[in-house]
Image 1 (cartoon, rainbow, N blue to C red):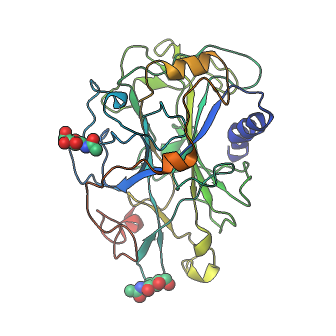
Image 2 (cartoon, rainbow, N blue to C red; image 1 turned 90 degrees about the vertical axis):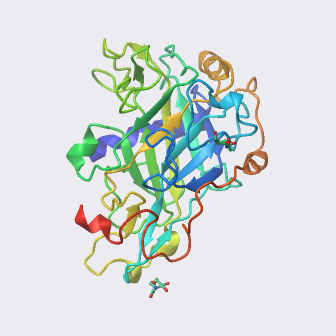
Length: 341
Ligand SMILES: *[C@@H]1O[C@H](CO)[C@@H](O)[C@H](O)[C@H]1NC(C)=O
Ligand SMILES: *[C@@H]1O[C@H](CO)[C@@H](O)[C@H](O)[C@H]1NC(C)=O
């Protein structure tokens, strides 16, 4: 199982480097880190657990699908300036031997060194040389993949492509695992979130934010697996890479004496099986569809901005609470919650 998992980003990285593939790979700096989740807990501030969010500054407690981000946002942290989408994941904490927690910082990916944390976003229309047409997401579209409450391999296997890469160096793209790395990773931990690539063609969202999307009925996106008849429309593969700078916690004498690993997701998951990612589509007009159709990678026809400009896009924090420094508990959680699961 785990041996099968190297293909995704390895292929992507190799093809991105050669410029042979039509994928968009770009940087989105941090917008905010706070307890909001307009998809799962609209209107709730604070939401149950902490997220790190990138993209357009229309991100808010509630995001009404009838007023998509391009109509509200004034800037984006992404280098494609017409992309006002929001992308978010949970946040990683380190638990020390004395039981206190500290937030693990994020670090930029290869090629995007000036970014203020955040993540690398990919939209992939096809892999290799077999071109296929994909339908870009529609205004109001949103989705979620993964389950914050998963704590076992079985529970997370149904999501197929939520993984970790233990970075030996910043270019490591092999050896993905479904659970949190068990040993210190010399260059940090990369969490990888790949969304399903088939859509029912009708619903912009669904009650669980997942039923309107599906994986190929056989094979994978990468092996050109067909979409199931219930979800016949092929959509681009959306993929997040998030790099957690765990390096300052790599000394074994900081790790738990029982040999377990010390990193905990902000929903209280130390297994890593609760990896999840959220998406609210927010490209302006048909910019994304045009980029997918033209098989471009740098896509000069798209409006872009520098990483430094993206870093300047901000939005006021709405939930005021301490998330940094040594904490007795992860924001919103009972101390030691992760040990009960
Ligand atoms: C968030 O929503 C509230 C209520 O609708 C609104 O007053 C506020 O301006 C919004 N904030 C941002 C940053 O869009
Ligand atoms: C807990 O351990 C961390 C890391 O060793 C240390 O920096 C912190 O001060 C300790 N906190 C308490 C309350 O002892």
